[in-house]
Amino acid sequence: MFRGRGFPQLLLAAILGVSSGVYVWKPVFQKEEAEREEAGPAQKGEERMEAGPAQKGEERKEAGPAQKGEER
Image (cartoon, rainbow, N blue to C red; front, side, top):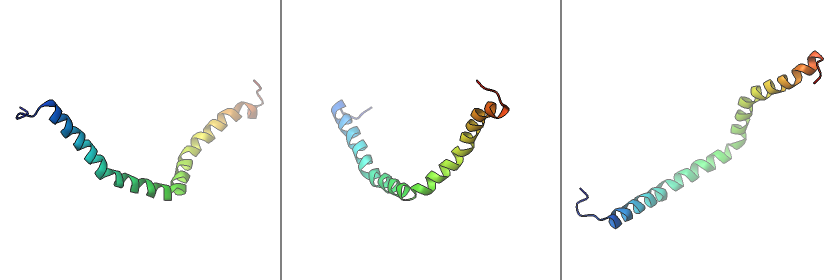
């Protein structure tokens, strides 16, 4: 099945495969991360817009009884 390859050779091949994958893909991920950091304020603004209605809804729930005149 393994054509005469022992466990140590298979382990070495697996380690070399993973490490070469990291070596190849690391620059790609670093480039993507740098691009995200450059565009950071625009993306953070979009996240705030998405989170805004939920936060406003929570504020309304908290402010609701006070507006009706009910006290806790």
